[in-house]
Amino acid sequence: MSAVLVPGGPGWASNAASGPFTMDAGWGAFHPRPSKPRFVVPPGAVDAHCHVFGPGAEFPYAPERKYTPCDASKHQLWALRDWLGFERNVIVQATCHGADNRAVVDALRDANGRARGVATVKADVTDAELRALDEAGVRGVRFNFVKRLVDTTPPDVLRGIAERVAPLGWHVVIYFEAVDLPELYGFFASLPVPLVVDHMGRPDVTKSADGAEFELFVKLMRERPNVWSKVTCPDRLTKSGPPGHDDVVPFAKRLVEEFPDRVLYGTDWPHPNMKDKVPDDGHLVDWIPRIATTADAQRRLLVDNPMRLYWSR
Image (cartoon, helix red, strand yellow):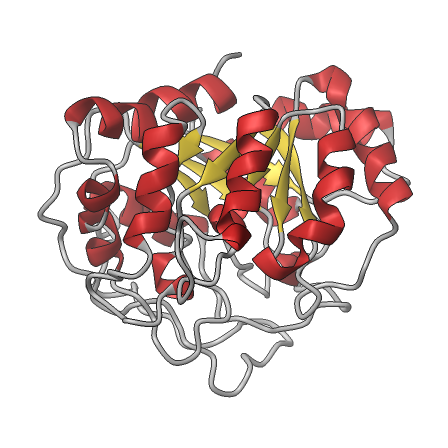
């Protein structure tokens, strides 16, 4: 009988990429001993934003990738899920795998219905390939506009992909930085599918949560009832630092209070490109009651909303 994998225990830590790959110098591997959170998530809670990396020996990293991470397997993700108290995961295709979704699909098939996925596809994806992804548990595609992570794809190509996945009932996950929203606003508003915004559109938290920059994002959500937001990654956005990420709280709390039925939360494990401040996942869970301050808000954020978006069929 094999030993149970536990975060912080034997077999947990990772500091290398397997196969013919070398992890980037200075890469911050995920936390070697994440704490047990004090906050107990409600029954049925979903970690609605996380990833798997490789393992590279089994699922090679894409030639066009902008980074080479440490391996982070589905088995480690399931161990973290149980450690933190979640019951389900939404696994988002990582840019290091390009449009090769095999690692995500493999994890979905291993999850016994407890995971859904968000894929990356190209314009030449076939209907059969989309159906296969749907059958595996994929419910959305991701468009990445962060220039340091991906090469730019023309808007018409992305719109064509959105039109292809709309009949499947999928949504589009969009990842961008706040400074780019004025340029992208019209394109986002034109897409024919629900949109889910990663990490609140990456606001500059040195500015006010009531200021003009963040107000434009709130306007997008207010005017487009099919736009959702992940109130995620305080560790990426903060300037004040862990464990409180105090400067991010006003932004996330505002979205949770103004749009209680269109917000999601996830850990972002294994935290790609976090080279100098790898977060403690237990602390990220303990941050939740700071932004969702009532049991009702916590249930919507962690259970009702992700179940409606990802497990309605």
